[in-house]
Length: 113
Image (cartoon, rainbow, N blue to C red; front, side):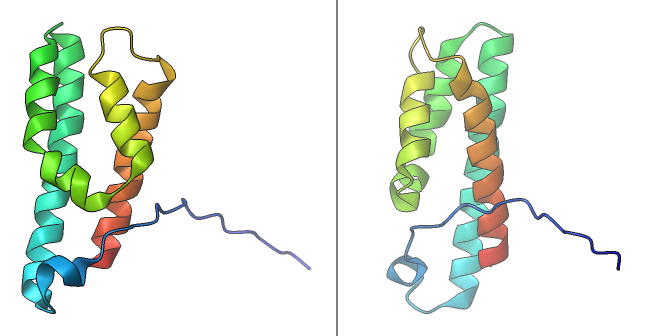
């Protein structure tokens, strides 16, 4: 018998209570999720640009802009990694963790629409 194991990419748990923000309005929930995904993509792109251009302010400004998304997501690992990456002596491993967390959150948020 030929058995195959299908391994799916792990999703990240979402700790956000969308009903707290969307008040049972599915259209607003979808719009909120879209904005959160856009924020996550923007902060990741800003980090890459910040490193490429050796300009830390690019990342700092993007982090400030996405502060509401960070608070709403209540993801302690993401918050810790973002805070670490703002520092000039950031842990090298946090760069890949950052990208992985962002990708997992985007996947989970997309499925929550």
